[in-house]
Image (cartoon, rainbow, N blue to C red; front, side, top):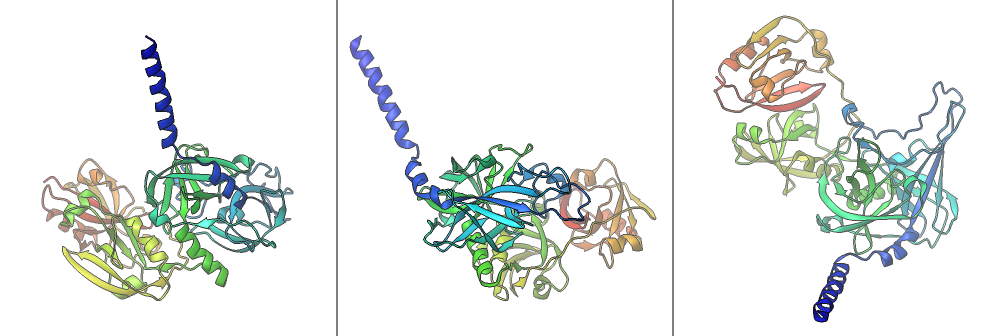
Length: 469
């Protein structure tokens, strides 16, 4: 009996030691890198002519669609927001030192519109910081304090980071300074709404309000990202956190240092993923690449001869598995540099060259679609009408297209076509009028997927339509 008990105790101790040996050890990393992380507080002075009380909630990042606002929330808190137009507004966030001479990184949204930025160090010193520059598209901001011989982080390579690898975050959630959380990399190259130029690192590291702008470390103690966003229905941590990769960050930092602003490469297309149904309609063996839904006039894409319906499968010999892969690749390419695209056009593979342009500010207008002469086609279950001059102007269309007036049961509804959509192309044939639409639909093959290009609220989208008869 004694031998059995001793053996059980031995096995238990052995198992505990084995499990402990397999878990990562963070204590030395925290001791080394904790002193490089800072707390950032900002103050925005109240404007004398302010009519409405300032919000106590931090502003959503630019470019987030309204329907996603409850899901994507930046996470710095505003514990002392004013109650009326006479009060200053304050916010808290995190940051980290990247050079001994006082350069500090944080998020753009942490310091946006700030009149005063105060950096608090681990030794309790507080210094005013100067904003060198910030970039809303990547959510990166570069600060500078008047100090020397500061402890700086080591910059790592996100390219070497693997899914499943342990990572560590240090920041100031809810104002609690030097808080440490750990987890693993859940995914790489995530594309988020409003973040087209950032291939985010997704982790399950606990990130909460106040962590924004803090560093994400790998197990070598090197920074591989800036914690930037969470996916949440409540504003609190739900297991999905997103960090900006440091290669993207340092590209922006170098530009902010040299010219005070960041420029991004531009192709000039609107793209979408290739679904299984769309791949079938384009004759592809498997779904991959970025499907061109719109070519911007006078853009590098138009000058290179890129067409609607082209599928971009490579950029400078780099594979494009999904549409989210393309914008970051183009975005970090220097302006005016020559680049190449491998595309699939009507079943044939081609390579075309273009010169990378400068990404402009181009707010999209929303389409407002309503009535005129109604034409019905019961084969796919929708009614369409020619566009009025007002609708054409609002939708920025010079010719062609029909507006969907009614959607009943049938292939169109199954494909996701909605009332108000503007149908521009079917099976790569331009739709110029309602009469033209009826003729094209009548000629479609039964039980075979065909690509339909629509415009919805100003944005072009390809859908896969499969008429039954």
